[in-house]
Structures are given as structure tokens and as C-alpha cells.
Image (tube, rainbow, N blue to C red; front, side, top):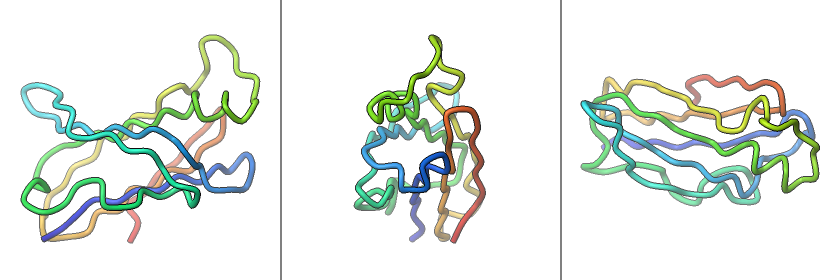
Length: 116
């Protein structure tokens, strides 16, 4: 069985993005919330975000609350923040594989890729 993992790196401060709320949605006829987690001190989640029989082919969204993270760090952000929530929509074509979706952030930019 495949599974989904993620982690966040704060490129503005050169450290893991810790304690960032992350929500996972399945996208179908409706947007269905599957789970919410927070990143740990290493910027990762303690367990896969999705695994087992719940990990199926389809379209998903990971929503990272980066604005809240930067405010907790004392970064002054404009209101509204340029990036408050980063939404990554991606497809799972093979439920037998490991999908790793990392996020690199700063207050004004982000990037992602399919990791390993």
C-alpha cells in the first residue's frame, strides 16, 4: 500500500517549518476534509498524512497555514498577508506508491516538487 507524506522547510530562516497546521482534502464532486495535522520540530509529520485503504487514486489538496506560522515567529506581515494559506493540488495516479510532497516557504514565495 502507498502513502502520503510531507514536510516544510522555511527558506527565509534556514530551518524546518515547525508547528504548521496542514489540512488534507480529497477533491471530487465536493471538497472533502480528510485530516488535519501539525508539523513537528523537524518540519515533518509524525506519521503519514494518508495511508492504507484511505490512500486511493484521485486529486488531493494539502493546505499549509504559513501565515500563522510566520506571525508566531514574529514576522511582520501585511494584512492580508501575501501568502496566508498555501494550497497544493496534486494527483495520485498509483495508490501503491509513496507520494512525498514537500513545501519550501518564505513570506513571499513557495515551491514544491514530488520528493522521495
